[in-house]
Amino acid sequence: MTTSTTAKSPTATPLLDLQALVVSVIRRRRLWCTAALLGLVAGAALAVLLPPPPSAVTKVLVAHKEDQPNDTGTLIRTDVALLGTTRIAGRALQALGSPEEPEDFMQQYWGTGLTNNLLQIDVTGDSDADAVARAKALADAFVTDHVRRMREAAEAEAEALLDQRDRMRKELAQVNETIGDRPTGSDPKASASTESLFARRAELNSRIADFDQRAAEARTGTPRLVSGTQIVDGPRAVRHSLPKTAVTNAGIGLVLGLALGLALAVVGTVVADRPVLRRQIAGHLGASVLAELRRRPAPWHRRRTRAARERLTTTLLRAVRGPAEPVSLLELGAARSAAAIAVDLAAALADQGEVALVDALPDRRLVDGKRTSGDLTVVSAEDAGSLPQPTRRIAVGSLAPGTAWTDLEHLGQHTVLVVRAGHASAAWLHTVARHLADRDVRVIGVVLIDPDPRDRTDGTLWDGPHTALRGPDGRPAPQDRTGAPRTRSARQNGTRQPSTTAAGAPDSDQEAR
Image 1 (cartoon, one colour):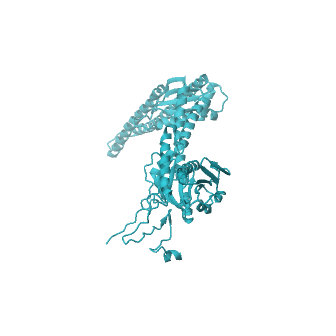
Image 2 (spheres, helix red, strand yellow):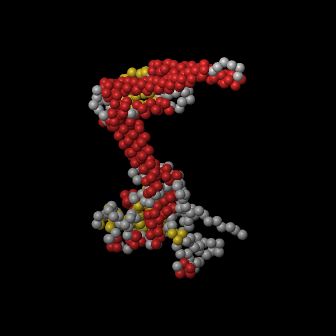
Image 3 (spheres, one colour):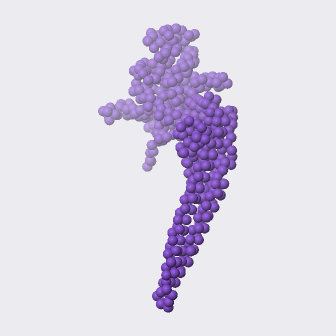
């Protein structure tokens, strides 16, 4: 007893093919390289065309009464927020004698907390001198306001303590008066009450002394805070280096442009869904990849490209040998390559008899009317019927959107697809395979134009009935163990075809459908 397994279809790809995504993004290198270059140029141009305004900087040491070693920067953030108030801005403008509005002036400076007690003030101005003057006025206004607030807080605390002391003194006077009015005697109850009054008087004296000490400390600590708040780094103009700024802006623009370009390339790749790998194109078209050619070979690759074209011509000669049936080369994004391949194939077949090239391309790349090129006769698709019967026809057509599908079978029942990688979407490749199968046009194979050099996938359909060429190769039909001809698989060009019995008659269920 045997168990049959069904091979996985080559077109069953994961939801997100990372290899295809990376290859597609690399093929779009012109997009993200251009975006990166534009970002580089824009950053450098921004530094030249929009130089930073004159600016000045100063640093202020700020002392706080509530300073703690574990402070997380709350106090200095409060100072930064106070620096950006209309009160500080107004006093600075008043010191400068400027009629500018505080709200407008606040947009031209900002503070930064460097540490818990160090504040940096950055100011812009019309010139370096103006920026330095503004920075000094702001620093002085901030220090003055901070000192005033510290003194007011200390005075308010001292006044509150002294008020408590005065209330304690009034109560102490009442207690002393009560003690003086008590008669001296041996009454136990009177003695106990007098002792409680003496205890209360001692407590009041202690609290009064504590309030006096605390009020004195509050006033004594203010000079320390005042002297601790000072300008430690005088206002100075900030020197801007144009080359350094240009390099920095150019680097930032390069990174941003590259990131934007890569993002656009990834989104465009996912949305467009244009296969670039061999296995993807072969799976969508339902035909194996015969050969690959560069679209625009570099000068140092011409010899290699010429050798590849010669190998391709030899492969196609083996595929189309036999009866002089018309063969077509149908291009998809590679009209020039398809025309060159057709000329090479026709020239190789010329020694076997008369050969004519039929130009069915929309732009009449091979012929305009009717002419003869050397030993090859080149005619248009309209004049192909006037050729003599023994003449072998090599037609070149297009599979671009708008193709007249009913004309494909008249170009030849056997075809070679010349497809440029990354040109057509997966849906259009399926459409091409379906229409070719409906018109009963057999695909010999696929010639891949402009493949990715990093593509290591296999372009052969190993699970199909034909693992290599599809065409009249002259070999006898394969037979099964009983000697009867083996039937073809139901799969043809990526579609399902009616199955046949051993006698060649259509199956009843398929015929009914």
